[in-house]
Image 1 (cartoon, rainbow, N blue to C red):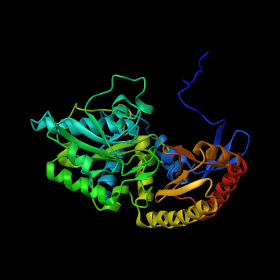
Image 2: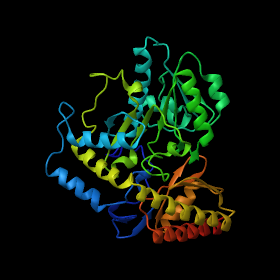
Image 3: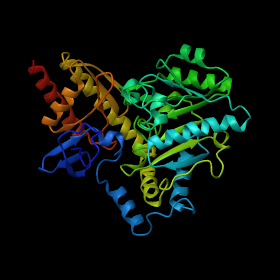
Image 4: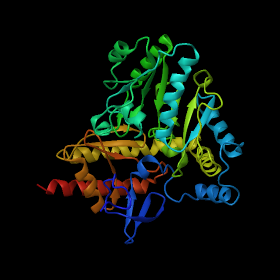
Length: 392
């Protein structure tokens, strides 16, 4: 008999009932240091008092009215995002997958409005992950995501990651946009080199092609800047955001330049729940905390400490680890043993990590993790590595 919850997840045998800061407590009373943060979602940890207060205050007033009406909380969050980024306008969604759907529609509508409806092709990159809708898996193209779901949507061309020559060769009169994660998350914590991102921007400027960044996982302070592309000194035309933007409340967004979004007029897109008062109240409070120079400076300080200690961990266990990857507090341990074995060994040491492609274990702690918790994390990972080393 099938489970009452559709069994599409390979879940760990853990059930958490409460959390505080960087820690979770399961239904047996056992505490775990959470280095996954809900896959990069809980940017300020669990039960953050500022976010709880923002949610409770709004919940006592108004939950939902739909986008048939003005939503002041949505307007305030949009203005905060525009003020802090390249964007002129924002559309709110509930998830990163929904953000991908709009980004694709926006890019194609942009060209259609100019009488160039033939420009529909979107260039993407091997190892990408943009969600699990049909459009999203068609964009990524990997067999793991697409097997059994044919026919896929046309209009996407996958290229080798960070290969500018392949981009130049593929870009032609049918190209609408280039879509890339500045740092691949599910793909194994693979940062695109800053020089490559700058070359993409120059190529798009030269050809009029739209540049779309997927910062669903690497955005919202995760790398020590509000958005990862800022390190390269360039900006996209369209950007997908989700995960950390709501601090745990389901929230996503598409940010865009006015030129890229001009053809998205009334009726061209919509969402019943997107940008509801509850989500936007929490998102605004999170922005007020995370987007400050002081907070981002702390992320960079902790990231430096964490990375240095992880490098030492790799050096201490050359039979288990190959290298440290990533930026800021979006880090990965490339493993020589099966990454899922390290994740499992971590459970035994009361620490939670997240597997990714290329045999990598992701470390995505809350951005406000303490220095003491970083020390605890290193000790637990060291113990987990010793467990693996002792096993045949």
